[in-house]
Image 1 (cartoon, chains in turn red, orange, blue, green):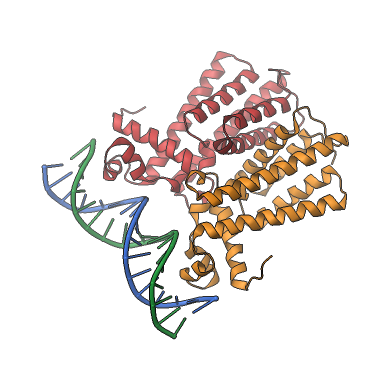
Image 2 (cartoon, protein in one colour):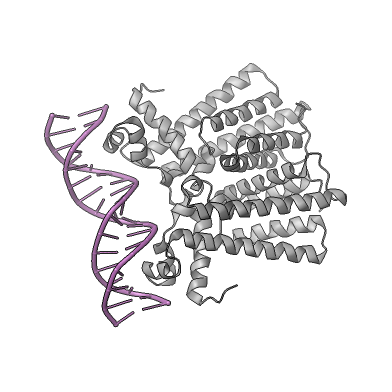
Length: 192
Length: 192
DNA sequence: GTCTATACCTTGATAGAC
DNA sequence: GTCTATCAAGGTATAGAC
């Protein structure tokens, strides 16, 4: 991580929250600057263009994800536990008021998005899908899971369910997300 | 259906397409008017406020859905066939370029939506969830499906998976949606 | 039913002072 | 690093002519 002053960190934090609540075109520099008690133009000092800000947000999300899965891989926990770790992460994010997962937050605006933002979005999506596929593969081999479809296909469906669940939960509340996590585990034949 | 001239119909049709591609705040009256070769202000003649337009769009979607499920109920087809009818409808809509399901298209903007639009959105969501629950209940009783969770819970998870699948498919293509439909049917123990 | 014209707001972005 | 000031663009919406 580069050295960062407090303002920069807060810009990224609020920016991320706004992004995940309202999407790319749903928040403005003014929304962020008001939260910090500064002016619109000050944000442009850190991120001249909005695409710079959003790209940086996505890079930091991906960095954090990469760090987290590396830590899990070292800890030698079961595939079930790895999944649960991800689910807990989603629930915690939901509780923090970051209502939509970052992947879902860009889909409506995707066509008109700047190229570098699109790239980051696809990269994060690939990383998440690849991680799920890996966990499912291991869990199958170790007999923790039971299902008959190719792991990639199953992984994709899980990501989609979480995507949708996170969105419905932003309207209907946390229980919605909890229920879907139970279903996902049940469909994997997961015992806990 | 009220009598409608061609302009009005086209406004609703393009409006719906734009809404499902870009969300509530992602399209403008100008987008629609340009498609029709008329001016911005002409649309306001039919729908003074944007919320009027979007409310009408949602009402017509819900009306169509209500009509479709009534027709299915009369036709006496199996629960599996009823599900497949819905899946085919989604695939057809996807092919028409209406990329996101209407429910998903309003979620990001939901908080700031006019009250009457929120109502229509929730109403459609309830209708869809209730229909899925009903079909699952019947399918269970007739032995067409096998699963252990409450039907409401399973129905919710299916809607979420379709929601997410439709969104990923808008980026990654039709196959994504097809794959998820297979998984959903597989998890229901559906034989076809 | 469609047009022109217009009012008013928000947004992304820049220039230049401090 | 933050401010004031400003700009062009695009959005919603209205008034009134045709």
